[in-house]
Image (cartoon, rainbow, N blue to C red):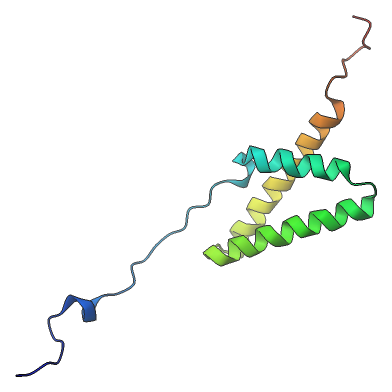
Amino acid sequence: MKRDGAGLPLFDWQQPVVTVIVFPMVKRVGRIRDVAAKMLDKPTDRAATFYRDQVTDALLRSFARVGISEEKQDEQIGAFWLAVDAEMTRLTYRGSRPGGSAA
C-alpha cells in the first residue's frame, strides 16, 4: 500500500489571495472626536505634539499589521488628521454665535 498523499486536498491547498479593505479613518467619528477632545485638553503644544505622534504610531502599527500599503496608510492618516483638525475647530467654536450672543 502506497501513501504518498497524492490526491489529498490537504496537500494541494494554497493560500487564497485576499484584498484588505480598510474602513475609512475619516468615518471613525468616535475615534476622531475622542482624539480631538484629548488634543484640546493638552496643556502645551509639546504635549499635543507628543500625543499626535503616539496616535500616528499606533495607527501605522495597526495598518502594517493587516498589510496595508504605505501609500494607503499615508492617505488614511492624512484624512484622519484633517478630520481631527475640523473636529477641534468645531469643539473650539461650539456655542459661539456669529455677530455676538445678544440675539
